Length: 270
Image 1 (cartoon, one colour):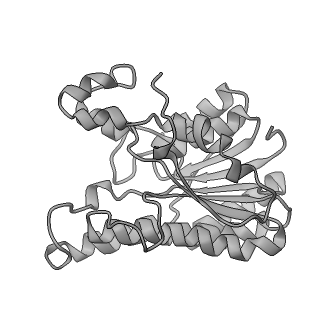
Image 2 (cartoon, helix red, strand yellow):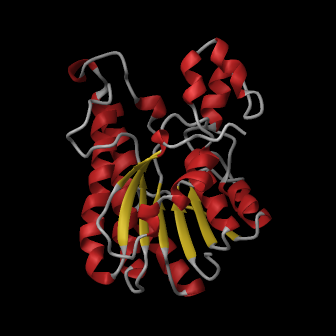
């Protein structure tokens, strides 16, 4: 289905980004898997997952994984990445903006004026600015061919008009990412490409499984402690069983943007 196509998954080290990268590989794509955590060293998030592991998983399912260590807040580094993609394969068909890194910065308890401004602004830089930097560098290459797709990974279903997401900076970042998809779709339409935002819901990410002391195989045990954990989804539902089959993604290039709330679709319980 995607043989000969090239994808850049920014934030492919773990969770939704890793799952999307692997599922794109399973469809035959070449996937540039980027992030800050590498076998050469961890990022400041201090998680064990690496971009090389993601690339190996892409290879294992029949795609071609290319790990590249990149800080997506650095415009020079991102421009260098896109230049490398153009030099090596000459095209870019899919861009997935999944950089986040805000879990440890989100304050769910206090109002804006009592929160750390430094943490809040860092969340904006990680969760919005990185997406802007990456799209600014990558869309020139992506727009050269019709049928290009930008996927913005977020949380929530409205770009400003929906329910408040419970924490000021978290809400600001997630609503902004949805708006990024709207704006990019409008700009890409005349080039025969489009953009969407997807909201995966409560994912059983590596960090979340660690928090509850379970694995993907034993995740149901966590429902004894947190009954709502039964609503959680594997990241691979978002990567494969979810958005790749959503009709919106398969509409002709240039179709109007839409928001794909993965959490409202049947979750895999495998």
